[in-house]
Length: 186
Image 1 (cartoon, one colour):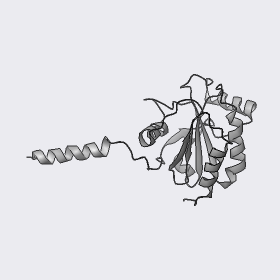
Image 2 (cartoon, rainbow, N blue to C red; image 1 turned 90 degrees about the vertical axis):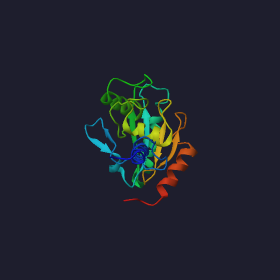
Image 3 (cartoon, one colour; image 1 turned 60 degrees about the vertical axis):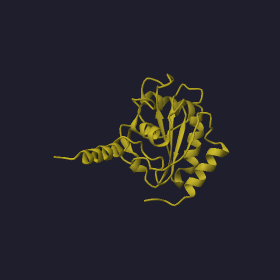
Image 4 (cartoon, rainbow, N blue to C red; image 1 turned 45 degrees about the horizontal axis):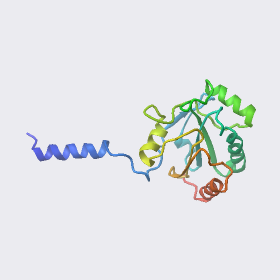
């Protein structure tokens, strides 16, 4: 027969292991996958050793011209290890009907040829696992389209940016350059 103390310890351990939120300094889980518009799947582990800027987007948002600046960043810093992953969402009712349509529209309108996930939710209970992890680990949830998350080469969240932060601003470019100057993980 199991003693009352043993039951208490077992219950406490179960609570600690499964109920407490993730630590904020934990890297993004590498097994989180995004389904890309092109039909492939990409996991964060595929970007190991790279600096990743994840941006929740919407083609019809007033901030959509930021696609042009995001493309400029990708062109300027891609060879140094920057990846920009766009994640279209209709959570704020400003996205087209399909990821394929959004990708074509952004290419024609903004000259953007960035990796683009299929349309997915970025907030609330139905959020993509990356955004659920971000909410639990960092206390960050997108409040609008074009919120940005900068992940270092080690998968750590370096910074989160509001929709109004322009990709070519000194703030964002400075953070990107510092992250790119860091040691390559592998």
